[in-house]
Amino acid sequence: MRHKDKFEIVDGVAGNARITGMVSVVLLVLLIAEAATIPLIGQLRGPHIFIGMLLLGPLALKFFSTGYRFARYYAHTPAYVSHGPPALGLRLLAPVLVVTTVALFATGVALLIVGPDNGQLQFLHKLSFIVWVAFISVHLLGHLVELPGLAMPDWRRSAPEAVRLAGAGPRILLLTSAVTGGLVLGFLGLAVAGSWLS
Ligand code: HEM
Ligand code: HEM
Image 1 (cartoon, protein in one colour):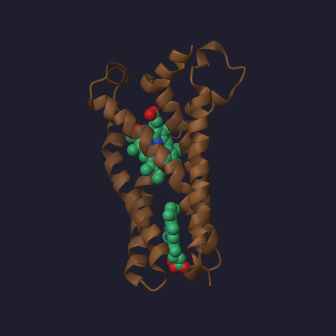
Image 2 (cartoon, helix red, strand yellow):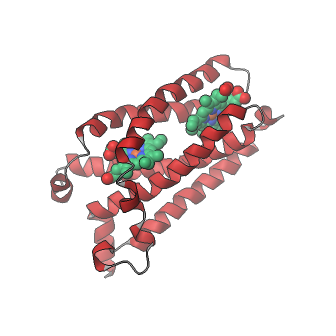
């Protein structure tokens, strides 16, 4: 059983998709909260920085789980090849989404470190946000329908056989660790945000 759990985590296409689905729900909720701080950024800089830094934990897990599927597919692992790649449109969009997401978060962290006196960096953060919104909107719409089926089953203790999949515990632990790591980063962000909050 122990071996089977490990096998599902390491090689299981379905387990991989469930991790991606679960962490995507966390991302969705936190991104909505982050977006809600934008219209009142003057008063909500603290929450913006905290949630932005917190997002880095789940985001790292998302990059890890999708990067893992990507690597396994291109390494010709049979299970991942027979499952196939994402739908063509989403597959083409994925690299641009990753690049714009990295730009958005990198400029956010850079702003936090550099402080309020860098107009160019503020412009780049805003610009990357505008470009990112276009791509994340398509990504979100493209994946919304499959999201509940991926994100919910691991939480159902009395799920029917067909829905059960070994490794639910480790997957939930992975998700919890990502959020905990994010929380640490969130508090760390606030600790160095003095110049933005004074
Ligand atoms: C900054 C935010 C995000 C980034 C960088 C990101 C990135 C990615 C990438 C690169 C993939 C693999 C390619 C693909 O299947 O399209 C993926 C898959 C996926 N994403 Fe996102 N994503 C983000 C947010 C979200 C959100 C908010 C949702 C909620 C709807 C979501 C739901 C999904 C789903 C369901 C999959 C497919 C899982 C699978 O079947 O393996 N993502 N994401
Ligand atoms: C590590 C994560 C992040 C950090 C540390 C961060 C930090 C900051 C800081 C310090 C500002 C300047 C606030 C001001 O001018 O008063 C800012 C502005 C902004 N941030 Fe972020 N941010 C992060 C992530 C994000 C994300 C994920 C989004 C989008 C969902 C976003 C969207 C924006 C926008 C649109 C502005 C400009 C608001 C305005 O001036 O009207 N940021 N951010």
